[in-house]
Image (cartoon, rainbow, N blue to C red; front, side, top):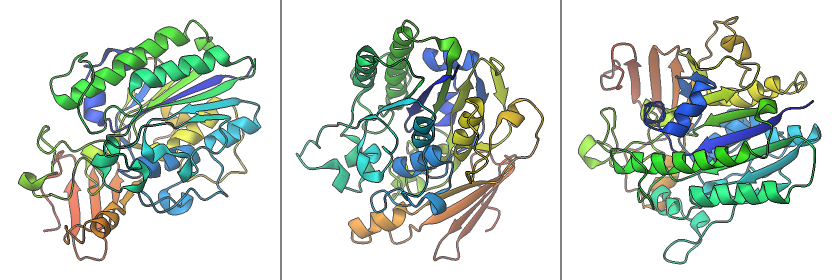
Amino acid sequence: MKKNLILISLDTLRADVGYSGKFPTIESLRKKSVSFLNTVSSAPITPISHASVFTGLQPYNHGVRHLFKEKLNPKHKTLSELLKKQGYDTAAIVSCPGMNKWYGLSKGFDYYNDEISRLPDGTNPLKTVDVKKRGSALKRADIVVEKAKEWFANRKSKKPFFLFLHFFDTHWPYEAPEIYGGNNIYEQEVAFADYHLGKFFEYVKSVVNLDNTTIVCFSDHGEDLEGLYLNDKGGKKLGHPEESGHGCLLYDQTQKVILTFNDKSLPKNKEIERQVRLVDLTPTVLDLLGVKTSSIKFDGVSLLSVIKGRNNITPVAYSETFYPEEQNQSTNNKYPKSKNKKSIRIDNKYKVIFHMESDMIEVYDLEKDLNEQNNLFL
């Protein structure tokens, strides 16, 4: 009997906050799951990171490298396409402009709900490259859960299903409609999403056999809160006026994300320190579901051997951002010192950031300098 799959994206959730123990639904899920504590995203931008998640490919291979310039290369199969071919019903409920059908991320989904409001000024959010302005057009967590319930209620099929839920509340603006916890405005948004995710789980266990369901939860990138946390670097006061939340920098506050796997074949309440990558998600899911992938080339690898302690190899984690280029194009070169960047993170020990079209290189010893404040290359 084929297992169902529920894939949950908590957009813009920093790993240190997501794993802080403050959020009951996330904690409840983690107690039943394997959690990777050092997972690195391929990019600090929603459509780019999700394209890597869905394809198991790095941005230079799947083709989405800017916020709003490229669509997913159609020759690459997505997780939804691969599971649909295996006889799955596929559905997605997404919550922001960066997950719009335009990007090609809807490939393979029978149902793809990407409805969101227009911006407060009435304009189309998909046509702005300002990540904060775009963020004000969203589908709130309670609506995501409501739409998920509707999908289950209308579903007549007995086939296995793949349901993807995308929550965008943790993205700016930080104005949670109701306060369910959290010590600051960012964490209040996390608590809001966490509360409604809990309501989803309360519902879904009444309509789905969770013993035959794999549940994977991740965040696509983190967030720099301009001084709210010790490792923040964004904003004028901290020396990076170009960084407003995420997009321009490749430090751990935006690149480290949460990643948990819940499956009857896996250990419960297990934490793994070994560095992994978000691009490893799809190969791992397919391995868990028993889908053969020998004919498919991924940049990611299945993490099952790491979970079972049989493989100690840690891939180098690659990240990139071309958002500075877009930002400067849309602001008449307001931040001339801001450059596109690529980085590699090595075995939880070192981070190297290359500023493209520049002589600037940053090197950090992550064991001695966890907050990436002492550039060894200077």
